[in-house]
Amino acid sequence: MKRRRFINITLGSGMAISLAPNLIFGQSTVLESSELLGKGSPTLYGNGFQLRKSAHDAFVKMQAAALKDGIKIHVVSSYRNYAHQKRIWERKYEANLANGLTPIESIYKIIEYSTIPGTSRHHWGTDIDIVDGRFLNTPNLLSEDNFNKDQPFYELKLWLDAHAKSFDFYIVYTNDPQRKGFKYEPWHFSYRPLSCEYLKQYQNLDIFKVIQGEDFKGANKLSDKVIQAYYKEHILDINPELLA
Ligand SMILES: [Zn+2]
Image 1 (cartoon, rainbow, N blue to C red):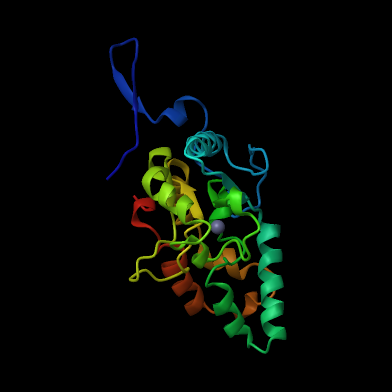
Image 2 (spheres, rainbow, N blue to C red; image 1 turned 90 degrees about the vertical axis):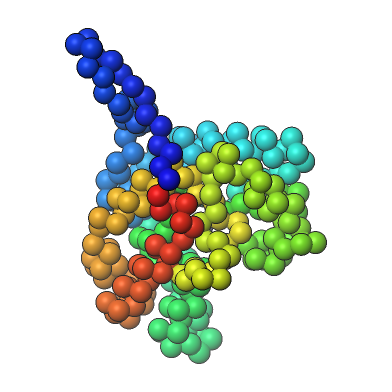
């Protein structure tokens, strides 16, 4: 179901045209491919986090609404550039090798939760990892268990289940047992009006070039077959509401 809203403009001749509001107000949703890969310099907004303007505005509203209900939404991670994702990847890759894993085993372990540099939705400035700021001392903040019943972030989870969509924030990696790719991430939310568009644009890129043209550690271990499966399962097997 498409929910894109259009604004009707009547031209002098009486001819009417419809445009998406973001095109009218000059906030084109078309990104340079460098920005889709975390290699641009987007203008970002936020106090203690970084998001694109409309995602920021919606998030601040959601945060205020949650606070009225006693829940303190705290952003653990928001925009991340390519270099940052590369550092995360390489730190995990090296640590896994040091623990005796083979390169390919290391890669499979990393992609349970983390992305190959250049393929993170965090590159877009539309996605956030959030927890309840009342309980920041919780060990391993971003672990599924913390969001379960009787655990510190359960109230936040229930609140988000009930309200996040009304602010256009959607969970990306659902707990649907049929879903492949990244594991369930009850903390990761995406601002749908932008990220849906960006994912469509991302699908026009040559994923093999994106990954194989890079020099991060382990890149040469990523065969065409592994990349193909990663693309299908990790990038595209997400909450279907974000694919519309
Ligand atoms: Zn995330």
